[in-house]
Image (cartoon, rainbow, N blue to C red; front, top):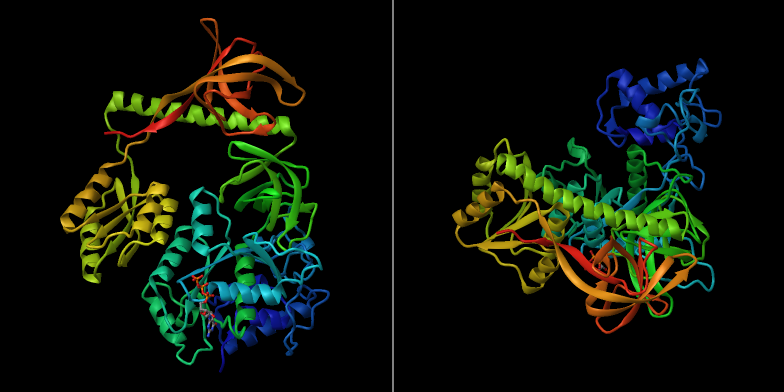
Length: 614
Ligand SMILES: Nc1nc2c(ncn2[C@@H]2O[C@H](COP(=O)(O)OP(=O)(O)OP(=O)(O)O)[C@@H](O)[C@H]2O)c(=O)[nH]1
């Protein structure tokens, strides 16, 4: 007797996956996910149950085929705006009937209005040359609607694919970068990670890294075994190798979805898309298009003609041309918006990547984006953020001082994240063996990744995302990797003697003290005239007499000998342009979060900098 996958059966019988899982629960049949397989006997039982329910008039959806229909029925489609496939995810089964015309199993009375589904956002990662780009290209070529004539193809870092189960958004900036730089800023943009593994090469160092990234982000993974068209392809070896990382494919009894594909012939790509939709369905991804807008910067660049172009992934709410956006301590007004196909659009809802024109400076990828009602509100929000940041810095410094004064250095449960690199498997095992004995109740040692060979740029990115230290034994980092580590402030430490490495771990266990900030003088300017501005308030037309002035710096205003105000430089202009800083000998317009500045005042700028502790 043959086995059947749960979701295939659900589709063939015209009921949703959640209903199927409910029935299986009722029968006491265990499963891992809707892509688990069940026995033929169980299939018969399910058919019987559905027939009985249909006869009693409780289950059959108005538009579904009779439950005993043997011909496969196409998966129900869904409205354009809905992303995930129509069948109901388990967790939300009780309250979505009104949104799901085909939700056979949803109970009649929804308890509360549910948010609409949104499309899954997918990132593709894997070892170099395993076919990430080819797979994305194949999907883009076959699944992205042809552009309108005259549209200009622009790389925006993401694209939307239409599948039989709805929209899927692919992030097509290099997987690791997109994933790690975005996550490093605390934003999670990907819902699902596809790990591409070439069938002729199996697991390689970057495959392990990619897996570690997805695991660290707690994002569900789907493995695409690529290049199955090659004669030397050995998908079974890939599956066996995966089990060594404790990732057990479904057919081996685990819950890892593994899909064989060929980016060259397209074989298996439909299945992959189907699994993405299934995973999305189980993740129950929802967002409110009517809610407050929030999004994440995917990438940005400066175009010589157009200016700053930023790709924003809308996560909540709807983005509209004319909206004011706040990113970090900057803001911009959307002058124009294009979709990932290059077409002009006026608004964009959740899970839509859009390219936005309107920032004066390129925001960094991974920064969170919020909207403000108007320019005034945007400025206020920024001033608030600057002040919150300062308060937090000050409070942190104060808290540490007070606590240490009272009780001396304080212990707490901490996790020390490590990435280990060594010359041989034997050394790695030896190090890990010693580390395992070092864990205490207070300190947990978390080895995110351990590998043979020199540390890679991927290690550095993972370290910056997860706040980890990279420890190398008998291997060293290349100049390029060191440079990336320097720019990201990641420490790569190399040792030739294991016990020196262990000493370093001891040092890390003892604790990294919280950072201490101190105020550093930047420069001063003399106010020469005050310009009244209808929107921005009073602008102090000033001349920088010493050092430099920087936007968002602290500002101290003195009049004669008296300090009359302490606040923030919220805006800095040279002529009509917003600038980040102005040097000695230049004139500028200073906008403070205060309106009473007068001619003759001296504005002194300073900023808080972290001081390294001995
Ligand atoms: N036979 C075969 N070759 C493939 C397949 N997918 C990719 N390739 C080839 O493998 C090579 C690498 O593919 P890419 O798509 O550039 O791989 P990648 O993972 O994006 O590589 P990087 O961007 O360098 O990390 C190219 O020569 C592709 O033509 C496939 O399914 N079958």
